[in-house]
Amino acid sequence: MNKGTTDVRVQSGDFDLSTEVARLRAGDARVGAVVSFVGTVRDMNDGANVAELELEHYPGMTERALHDIVEQARARWPLYGVLVIHRIGPMQPLDQIVLVACTAAHRGEAFAACEFIMDYLKTDAPFWKKEQTPDGARWVDARVTDDAARAKWASR
Image 1 (tube, rainbow, N blue to C red):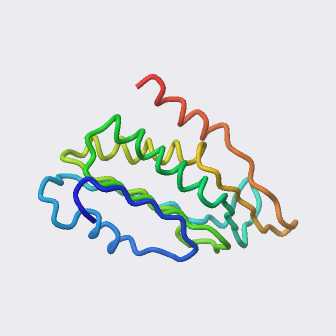
Image 2: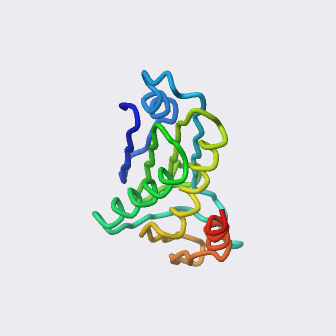
């Protein structure tokens, strides 16, 4: 990955954290901080066992939304590299769903940007989640806590 780049991917296949972070910071001696977040599939949600999580998206629109979120982060913090990988399709508990990684000169900017991107991703990216539970399939509703997490950035 070149200096100052943005890499956004929506894919069905898994990713390797070490490989992706190494690529993000490769050859950029300005980088003093790399912060990453990996979200995984839980085996329990809202009191029910989850056997499978399936993510659907709107191709094209989803990628544009993710790029927009990254550009908002770049407008707030001096970032060198940003990587967002979000998986789609069926996944099992323990599977990786999402990777957000940011590089910057200092940890404060990298941490804040990574958290910002995740908070906006949870509310603004067009993904739909369906869980397979013992009672059958159910769509996952948006969470009030995700809206509150996003809202905190309005005052910052």
